[in-house]
Image (cartoon, rainbow over all chains, first blue to last red; front, side):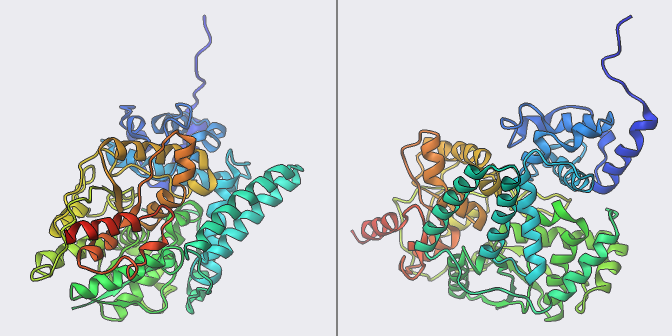
Length: 206
Length: 294
C-alpha cells in the first residue's frame, strides 16, 4: 500500500476553513478549480505558479502554515482580476487580504516583510492625522524596514534602500510632486474611535 | 451645476496637478466642484489588509459628511478613493447591522442616498448634456493615446454596479472622442501597474509595468492617458527604471485625462502644470499645438 498523497482530516481542517470564509466573506468551498483566476492573475509569473486556485485548495485542505506564508499572499497586488472572472464569485484577493491579517495575528514573519510594513505604515498615518501625509508615511515605512534590517545587521540593505528612495524623492521634489504642507482632518477622533471598536471585533459580517 | 468633490490625499500632494486640472476642466464644462469639508483618508487598498471594519469606516465618514452637506453627487477622481468609497457605501447598504455600528461612531450619519461617481461618469454626463458644444476645440491629429484604466476603475472587491465594461472599458475613449481624439485599441487597458508594489516589491511592479509599456509601444501609441493617480505616478516616475531593466528604449508621457481635455480646450500646457511629469510630456503637447496652427 502506498501512503496517501495528502493527509486530510475534516475535524482539523474545518475551523481554519470556516474562519477564512467568514472573515473574507468568500465561499471557498464553491471553487471547482477551473483556474480562470490562475490564467488572469497579474502576479502569476512572480509567484512561482502559486496561483489563486492553489491558495483556495491549500485553505480547504487545512494547510494553515502554507496558507499564511506563500508568495501569493504577499505578492498579491489586489487587482481583483481573479474575483472578477471567477464563475463562482470567489474574490481571492479578499482571501489574501484576510490571510495577511491572520498571519499578523499569528505572529508569522511575512515572506515579504516590506509589504506588511507598507500597509501598516499607511493605515497608521491615515489614523494619526486623518489624512495620509506621503512624506511622513514613507518615513515611518522606511524606519520600520531599517530597524528590521538593523536587527540582522544587514546594513548594506539599509544604505541601498535609502539611496533608492532618496533618488525618487529628489526626482519628485524637482517636479514639484512633493508637498511641503501638512494634511489633517479635524474630525480624526471619530476614525480613531472606530478603529478602537474595530480592534475588539476581528470579523465583520459581509 | 454644483457637485461634491472628494480629492483624497494623493490629489493634495504628489498628484496636486490632477486636482488643479480637475477643477479647471470641470469649471470649463459648467460644473462647480465643492470640496467636502474635513474629509479623511479613504484607507485605500491598505485598510482592507489591516482591518476590515476600518476599510468601511474610513470612507463612511466622508459619505456622511457629503450627505449632511446636502450633495446629491460626489465625484472622486482618484480610482482607489472612488473604489473604496463605492464599496463602503454598498456594504453599508447591504448590511444594516454594520451601518448601525459604523453610524454610532459618526457625528454625520450615513444614509446612503448620495451618488458616488468616478471622474469619467461625470465627464460623460456633461458631454452628453452638450457641454462640449460651441467649444473651440483644438484638433490633435498627432495624438495617439492608449487609455489605461488600471484596476480600481472597473474591478471591485465587492459586488457594486460598475458603470463601464469590466474587461474592455470605453469611458476614456468616449471622453477623448468628444474632443476629436481617437484612442488606440489595445490589450492592457485594465492590467495592473503593481500599485504599492512599486515601493514594497519593485521587482514585481517593474515587470508588470514593462508588459504594459511594451504593448502600448507595439500598438504605436505616443502617450498613455489615465484617471488613476497611482497608475500615473507609477508609470511616470518609475518609467526609466522599469524600461532600463526590461530593455525598452522608448519613453512615453503619462497624461491625466484632464490634461488632454484641457489642452484640447485650449488651455496652455503650463497652466495645466503639464511640466510636473517625470517623463516629459511638454514636448508632445507643444508639437501638437504647433501642428494645429499649420
